[in-house]
Image 1 (spheres, rainbow, N blue to C red):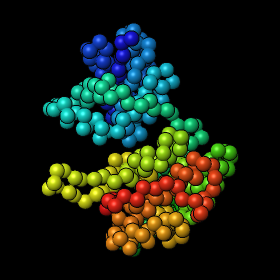
Image 2: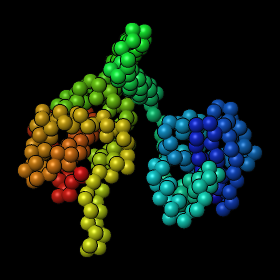
Image 3: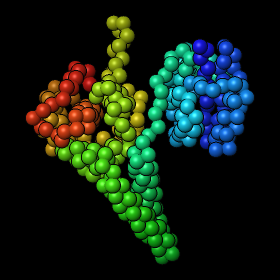
Image 4: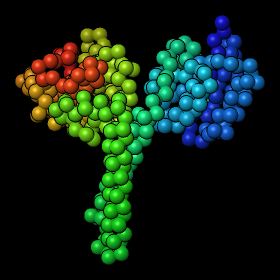
Length: 331
């Protein structure tokens, strides 16, 4: 059976599509909206397409609505790391960089690599993710206003306006924290996962909520290393022939949000979590510098998180999940 591919290059306002059928491309452009999605559906119907493999890049959040729409229509949807598409394009020596060409490149990548199918986030997890990200935005906005208050001229009207703005954001932050807590309590699955996560020394309520929002579904990962790779916490080695040997660093090809979430908990776990503490001490005795140790502790902590969520059992300091102690650790 002929495989039909739809490559989509996505921006905030439009989607450029490249339909690859019988080794021929058919291009079109639609709005990145419900109206545009309906027009795309009609265009596919006119081209006698019932089911196809759709591929798109994970560009911010702009891809989410069209991915959800096409998945509901019964198509296979793959969401690909933009770095993979960029590397593929470079390997093909593509000289042009246009939205139309990018859609073709994504379709070609899909045909040759057959990427894994994407699955929509469960509604309760999606809501938690939205609440957590809204809380993060409010905290950033409040901090910006606090910074302005510190540096602003001490004019009464200006100071009053900034203080009112800071208080408004604090009210919204408190509300969002309340909604997050209530949502977790009212979801048996999320409540159970939070109980498991906060059993790990170094992880408190806020971090637990953030982790559940970003990990999404622990069953998406076959092992702890896959979870670490998703977070960009696996080592990236640089070794070529006998003459080029660079520092081993974090790959950082993964979720920057997850790395950010794990940073301070790893520092806390380095002091208070017996497994992470012992691991950090060994690295220190081996002469590793501070950032190498923190990065390795972030990965170690994520391995523990994986083990706890996968097993459904609270943290046990007497049980250490398998962890690879490479001699080369990320900087």
